[in-house]
Structure formats: structure tokens, C-alpha cells
Length: 328
Image 1 (tube, rainbow, N blue to C red):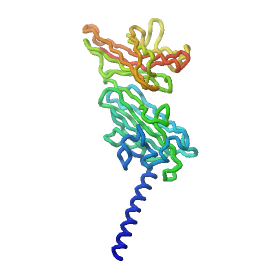
Image 2: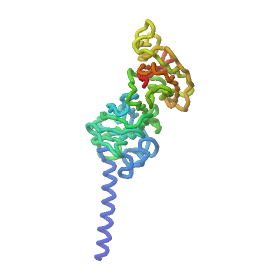
Image 3: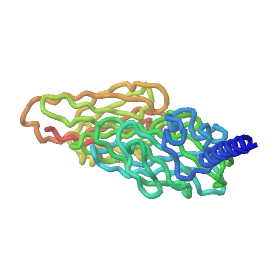
Image 4: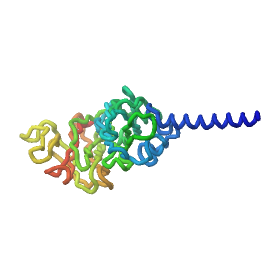
């Protein structure tokens, strides 16, 4: 009889512990970092994600309302600079202002702001309260190059269970995982200026350079967030204030490209065909040899890319931000 009571007590303890664990996962309002609480490592970029991690819903995205995660920040930044980033969830569960998100980066780190916390050596960030659907924090990197950020967002009804919620991935099709938000981290002596205008599927093309220009070396300009298999023109200008008699920046709205601007004088240019597959996954590289002439040291070069994106606007062209690079 004593052994039976002990067995029953142990059984109730185990069942109770399991119930508490499931309840904890289902009702957790302080977010999840990948790898925590049996959350899969690829939670922000592939199946299984939020719903299939016993957190929210049955595993199908947008199950109770289409969720649109929006990320706002500078997409071309300097090495070491802290760039403010705001994440907002639109749509999803109605009659509620509650939500959460989880985000990871393969380059750089996050600095938490109000209502957020980090993990994985600051390469992951999430909410620490589910009372709102917008969060502001910052991103920076000690390495140059392209940073890829993946995200999943969740809108909740606040019932403390995994029912009644709706979640989705960041990207043009929030039912599908894997689309990264891209930020280029430039050399610390390279200055991005201005902004890009959005193209097909809402992707804003960007350019960057991982290494500053130097005499006798080749400067590489990298372009991303492009449609695949389209022509891309990389401009090298010696001014960002005028192109002949035309003052810069020149707003191209009058030609049908609303929100797009020419930001560098058209002194030299290269054209390449973008590589890649899928909306926004195109990329192109441009090599600019710098002659080994001491008279060129200290000269400012201004770069921009024009993308021939026929579905973007009436002109069929989008523009990137500009880059100011001083020859060392």
C-alpha cells in the first residue's frame, strides 16, 4: 500500500510537472530565444516555428488573421554604428493589441530597448512582455558585410494558452519562411547617405562596400534586395550636389518613379545583370580599380545604383541610397 501511494504521488508529480511545462510554454509572455525551452534552432527562418513549438496555434501561419511584420531601420550602415530598429506587427488577431516576436541575425548584434531582451551572445532578440505589437531596439556590427536578419511575429489574444493566436514570418509571403531582412555594414570610413525607394514586392535595393577605397586597389560595390535577372547600373560620380547644371539629389517622381532620387553625378557607370532566384534575392557586384596616383588621395567618390525594375513604378527604375567613399 505504501509503495502504491508512492507510485501514485510520483505519477501525479510527473503529470503535474508536464502540465506546468506545457502551460508555461503556451502562456509565456516574455518571448523566446531559439534554443530556449525546447524551441527549435531555426524558429525564425524555417519550419517548425512558433505554432509547431507548442507555443501558439496549430503550426499554420496566419491562421486567425494575416500578420504582416514590418521592420524599419537603416539598411546600409557604418561599422560599429548603432542603428535604431523598430519592429511592428500589423493585422493578425483582431480586438487585441498584444503580440510578440523573435529575431536572429547571422552578422552583428542587437542591443535591447524597452520591452525586449537578447540571447545567443546578443545575436537573437525577442519581447519580454506581450502587451504591445511594436518594439524599438538597435542593431550594430563589428564586422563588415551583409547581415541577414530573420524574424517571426505573433499576434495574441492574451488568454494565456496556445489558442486564438496568429503568427507569421517576415517577408513578401508571410506564409513561407526564410526571407531575410538585409542590412549592409560598410567600412567605418564609408558614409551612406539618402535612402532607397521600394521595388517589386516591397524590397528596397541597397548598396554597400566592405572596404574603403585605397590607391592601387580595387573597390567593390555590392548591391542586394534586387529582382533576379535584371540590369543594374552602378554610378560613380564626383559630386552629390550637382550633375552639370542639375542640382542633386534629383527627385525622379516627375518621371514616374515616386520616392526615387538620383544622388550621384553620372560621371562613370557600369552595368551588370543581377544574379539569384526569387523576389528580392537578386544581387550584383561592381569592381572599381583605383589608379595608384598620389594626386587622387583624399578625393571623394559617390556611388549609387539604378535598378531596372519594370514592375516597381511607371519609370521602371528604382534607386539605392548613395555611398560617399574617400580615397585613402
